[in-house]
Image (cartoon, rainbow over all chains, first blue to last red; front, side, top):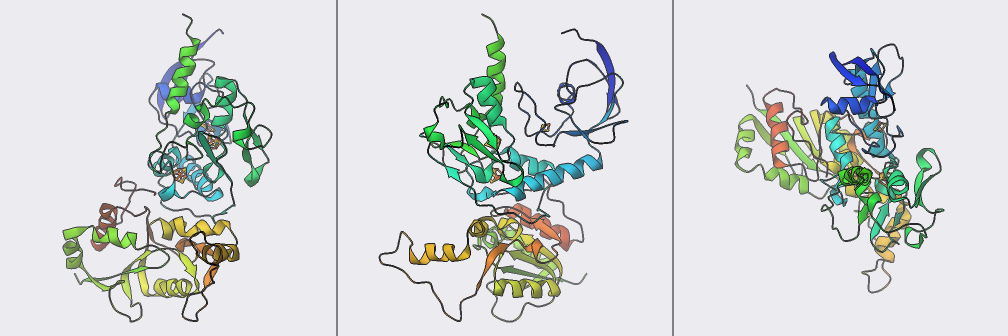
Length: 237
Length: 180
Ligand code: SF4
Ligand code: SF4
Ligand code: FES
């Protein structure tokens, strides 16, 4: 891929970079914090969570930093009041849409959604909770899928397909009925594609996927392990 | 400066938030210098009085809680939601995923810990459960929120001492915010 040098401005700072990269990548390289949830370094970005929004001068709607490529002379703002307002709303909707009971959740204290809530200063939720009845799939011998805690970031789906190559996970339905499914919506324990590798569990930002060997509040995931693995697999020995 | 009036109450909660309040230990003396605690779960009977600050633990689960919170709101200049149950229903709201009748039958009639078939308690003195459990802010206006199950004693003391000194607390700035 041929790269051209380009110059852009982020939050008033002039930054030199190359074409072909996303706004998120450039921000990270320059220590500019962008909130993300569906992004996991190394796997394809899909722009699902709408947290990484940025303002680009001349563009009327907010754009997701993880899926928007940089261009020469772009003027980008990452932390305006408008962006913060949207991020707080998005976080509240994550919490209101499923059932997040942190106090009894396996991920309590080690959860990316909890951390996000602190980042956007979410001390309460202004929308009515939906309190949906959600299933907990415990059929797999090693792992659990708890739909109560799933924010449908699809990190599990992409890791399973792109890194493990097993294609166990998929997404079913739309709107509030959207669900992550194993094979053709069958119990995970009966999957003929799952290789039991556990990469989806590591990749999951919340208490939606967890190993049975862990007790409440003791879950400690390492999604960066997946990113390292991807890098290592690129090495030719 | 005249002393402020402070009240605490627990609705649909487990009293854990109040335990955490007690965990402010000797700092309660600082609170007592600036405020009189005119009502709390260990102060006897009488109606919820007019206060400057009300700390409310727990969600709205029943007809009684609903009546109480509407009254508390009228009586309080500042109403604080104390803890995850008050703010997001937390464990008390886990019955919201199901139909109330099924929940009651499962807990009383067919409970796995029952020796024989149980009965649904039905006494006039018992409160009547709402179909759904509500967080406080869905029923009344709430001025401040202290999340956590329970919130830390530090967070509670911080909010109280800010308010009692006529400052505006900001838990996230103070890095004292915690869910769960
Ligand atoms: S997944 Fe995270 S935010 Fe949701 S209940 Fe568990 S700890 Fe809380
Ligand atoms: S199970 Fe976890 S990784 Fe998969 S979509 Fe839900 S929150 Fe994301
Ligand atoms: S991280 Fe960009 S949309 Fe989710």
